[in-house]
Image: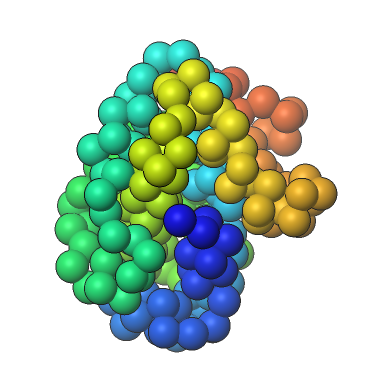
Length: 192
């Protein structure tokens, strides 16, 4: 599976963006702008989850469960997608950061919070399906998941570590201290 092609379809003008725009009730250019923030943010969150031993086990199971998803045919996949399943995936990927991420992307893209929620619920299963298929094709172990999720980040940043992935880190790191973990814990314990 060529991860670059699928990611490219999610981030560039074309049928995929138009299909998503119809489903969320927004203009394609707004959806494309939101997708350019959403995809790297989800990838960064998946990368953080893959590096955490407990979350890695859960991610590994999700990837195995979705290894047969046909995400290479994005039009068909999006057309038959279960958005409730996408919402569940999103909750696992973002945890307590879900509302913060939705709000940040909404403010930056011009989409409403409900439109961003719909967009993220469509993107999460695509990313999980991509990673699941790649994991199966290359027989990647649970312990190597950080390398797999990190490869998506490298594709998005062009290998430089800049651009889209830096924006994603800023969306996830609310207080800009470089730590996603304290922001997540703050959500649980009321810290701001």
